[in-house]
Length: 562
Image (cartoon, rainbow, N blue to C red; front, top):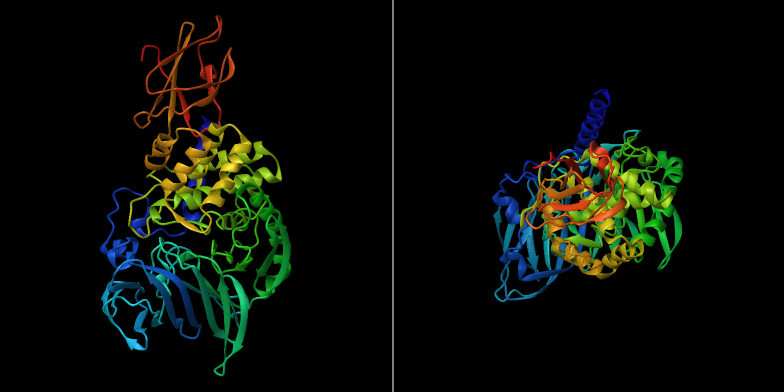
């Protein structure tokens, strides 16, 4: 009894840490509960409505002035686009308390009618595709990072301003005007960050140079050469130092740039050294790093972390694990820095492969968490990687499905991390061929490179390339909170078994060890099936049948005759 209580306490503790730390604040509509009702604002920002679908963003030219003295932003975004069908009303998004000053096209101010945090801009008849420039100013949204904040206003160890943006769930429109819809990414983007002369402005992509202004500020220009999701765009300002390195990668030399705060330079050189073996590991398993043209960066931030594209935000305080904790409870998670590993994995899944819907964010988080296990495997062996992923299960809550509703901004369920990773780990067992599994992962990166996708796109690819019937497997794990239970009973010389707590038609194979028969594959359905066992085999106790722990299922013994 004492051992059971201890195990339950550990599981509860890790679940709480996962909930509180992995995503420090979750908006009310984003808890992963099916009963959550989306607001009108959620739908306006989250849906691909007619005021968005007729035009496709091709380029954002964002200029933002960061004013630490009064915690304000001001600037403009020049939006280039192409019309894919006739349209005259363009939805731009900018969240209060920021104010949209004007929208200009061809030197003429356009009418803009406000609908909450959206602005419906009336274009000249015919919807000419000349760029539209949105001017704005104000105090961007605040909150607890990294999910409900637009801008984090902090100070470094000597009291100097330290500012960083982060907005995955609340939306990029919390700090700049844009088409805040995950299904439409620009083909490229410029970000010009103006900060006081005492600070350095760091953003995504390649540094193109800086200009000292007459008013005591400096503008730092950055350029992203490929598509970028809105929440992957970031502006950072602080007393940054810089050092660089190069990785001999699959696609040639990959530049590595590191931007810690100046007092942390020496520590960063040591801790961030793990980026090179991590990138090599991920290239082997996931394919070439997706952003060679833009390079790889780590940028110290005043919050835990975020997968900002080609400029990962880092705030793990240079501690092992997750702020000094191992979320797997195995000790393996203390061998590396969680933020460096997890957030960098998002360069493949989240940044290169981006979901069109918040309800499909499990694709981002399941694969990034699964990559933690791959990195552990690269450091040790397959068994260690599996041990790490299995250890994460103690943090799974199963309070709601990890696939969410369509067209709703801000949806979120933290189980998409640990549960999502264990779904992938289970599918690896079903594939039962590590070479093929690696090619599936690399094939995903190759096939969907720099694209927006649906969860169904990813599910169908894995099923097709594996040759397995996985539709009901995904349905079970993504849309229900029930863990498949392998029920079994022993009557005489017959072992009977079936699946319980599953969706109709669920028939996933599973690897087990049966006393007297050893290891073998079973192919249960919802109906009882029988298997002869050797005479004299012990027929009592849990040792009759043991499920391979690499499968995210449970096993329970049923009474004879049930």
